[in-house]
Image 1 (cartoon, rainbow, N blue to C red):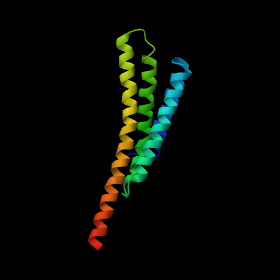
Image 2: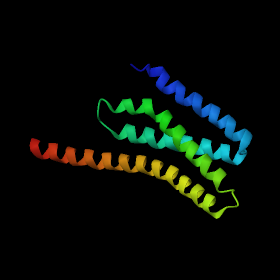
Image 3: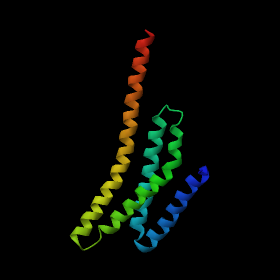
Image 4: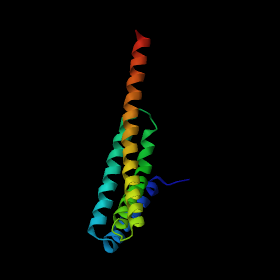
Length: 130
């Protein structure tokens, strides 16, 4: 159905294309924001996936580039919109930037929940063995 390399290569290609467009049209600041949020999302997602003991957790790596691209684009859009003279557009830009940061925070929160869930399961298993 899906070719695994395509699930990784296509989002990365889209990221590079978007980065090029953002750098040419919105400037270096937006491009740096796009890169920073992309890398932050990859780092948070990688850490979140690494916390899981599930044999199927690695599937998350397939979708991580796409999510990181979306978060990066949201951040770049937020930076671009916050430059507007219109107060409403600046508010939308701030909201979009917060949404990008929220997606990263959700990845981190999910990793923390996984750690707590693993500890609880370890305690329950230790109690059963005793």
